[in-house]
Image 1 (cartoon, rainbow, N blue to C red):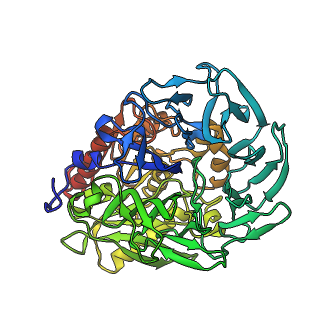
Image 2 (image 1 turned 180 degrees about the vertical axis):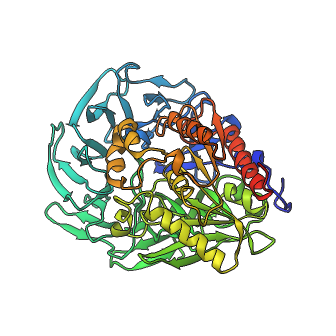
Length: 596
């Protein structure tokens, strides 16, 4: 398929276009990141690109990079001059050197999950965890010696070493890191449990992304004002670097996020997010802000710099995410892609129209959403998307899964419902105790608004969501209006049961979110539902979806299922995504034709 072709997008083509780029890092004179390979079934590989050279995979096809520390992994590689370390999909650490096979450097049966790798001062650090707690460890290059530096019955993250001073994050076992966390510093290794002094963080303050700056000061993001902004610790006090009423960091679902960095001229580069649009700005020594890469609308939380060039994983409404370079010598320079088929923007696929950013006011709040309009215009059948998380956002970027439905005449509304990130601490926490209520209200408000304005067709208003968004979609199906039907992918069905079964990291989130809405019960479901679930899902058990399907069957309620063998929580493999897209499309089309 070329960029000149139009018409319905094939599901297989869309599935093979879902290439992810993550954990962008600059080291030496090269860029490093993790990239999925759809031609190898979605295997994630460590990539390297020198300035002016093509990107090349550094890990063999048989090694998929990415562990499950804290359920979602992250911080999955570290690099030195001629050696790299990666965390495999078994959550173990492997050493990679040119011309040789990866070598396991920790005991295969040590029972820990590893992640948050960091290499500095010839020391390799990692966080490792079990259900009993976390440790920060120093790993010898040959793996023969693993020394515990810090231990906790709660959680640890982001070890950052400068000389012998170690900075790291910690939070209690009954909290989430975006609600309450602390930044500690140990002046000299080794440490001990609870070691070091607390530099920032409190019960109502979340600290993320510590990093030693080139000036020797410790930088970090804190939401002490209600917004995640950049601060620095001078050794005796904490100073704001770029105060603003905007979030400059996302909720830390994964390790390894670094949404700011430093240039060789002494500027700080950082992202600024409003829940839908992300910008890159530079802050000079006088505190003045300059907008950079203004052609981009979405960026992942990774910013790197080599000299006076910045690098981000960015995208626009008409181009999908790729690694891009920004020349900092001129403020108006656009970000230019250096990877993927988006280097020739028009050849990445059929043209896509940018969505409209709209706002709907409810009795309790204002809710923003993206509205994608098909070529045939409005009115059109509508799909409301409830994002996963729910502390996620609605990025203004090209998503071929959305375009799959838009190319078939559907309008798609992506809702930044209460609980979403990028809109401050208060908005992020507004869903606490009201999950299955406020999120459903906000999605319904968007649907009602589009119905009342005549932009969508009555009896063709669908809602879809994955994971936590699947829970939202199913609760929406328990209402008689405004939705015609719901699709739930990898859905959480019963928050109480989920809290007990979910990995340790996420148990506090389940408890904090849970409210009166409770379990999805078959007898409460009023609208047809499609349940899509991987049988190997370790975050939201497939048994719960199967139990709900059996209940619907017993009551004679309309439903469909697609259970994907050996597929986990994310439908990242192209074959699984293709099947899911076709099942969801067929479900809607049969309902619009009023087929049984």
